[in-house]
Image 1: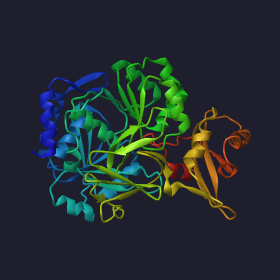
Image 2: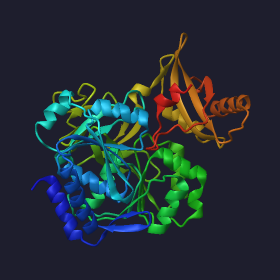
Image 3: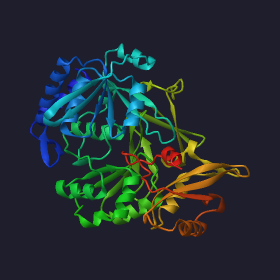
Image 4: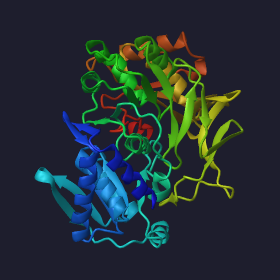
Length: 453
């Protein structure tokens, strides 16, 4: 019995238990198992097997059933999530996508045949195994997105029943390793997952109240927007037991404000990479950014203050970049950390450090200060070359009040920072950008913010 067969056999045991809640309707494990069989038959009739298949759609029950059906027929999946058409075109080219699927009204499968031939060496070698795979893409937060090929057999083998599953809201989408981790963990343990394609703070709070959600896995960007909206004050969120956060560095001020707003909820930092999956983690406390990492299949080490990780469940490889693994299987994550016993604190990406006159500045520490200003909704900080100091700190601000006087706002920012930051960390330039600084995954995208200047 392969990993998928073992995984799906548990669905029969869970039977009429609610697997998914979507648009105020419950879907049982029996229903999900039947729909996987249905879509497997449809795909087989259309000859869509052992191919590279992109699919559009988020967490609807039909898309989830289609997800497993594609694996069952040994396809390589390319989930497209909420990416825009320009991004999707780049994904098609990188992953040699042959078919694009979507589900129209009345459960009609729409198939677009791109008639693509496979030219990528990594994909060609993997397809010779006749094993199912999945391609995920980096967010492109620092440049061109990387395509990462995972072996589905290896990925599914990590999820074994027997662990406790809380009623969970699926926030991170199926095109994100965190979203896949949430779904597979929940389904393997017979849990209930609430899915929705509207991720506004008000909607999330309403769902928590309506379905007594116990676990909320989200990003720091979303949590900051939640606090600013104050939507959590309008709903009964007493069912919440855990708020887990990852995908980017959590601002200290946001974490402390969150701990104050949700005193009875455990705040848990998670850590993972699309290349490696999600590690087991344990936060020192709800208001602490110190976290212990590792366990199960993961080994962790720190070299020159940079985190390295090794795991047997790592991706097969990049489709459009050199392998990031050394000859012993270790990967340099690029994350700079501090260490305290068994705990680490993640400071930021090594590649994003701004060197000003020989002194290092992490963008996140400046953002942490600026985001505390009530006039600012979102802020992105980066470095800009300077002939005297090498670099200067630059901030791009999305003001809460769109009609604010920009000149007055710049002076306010300078004054605020002078009281809280060393002089070389204070933004020399401040730009204003009224569009969102995050993508559909609610993750800050520095490269796109910089490109809009």
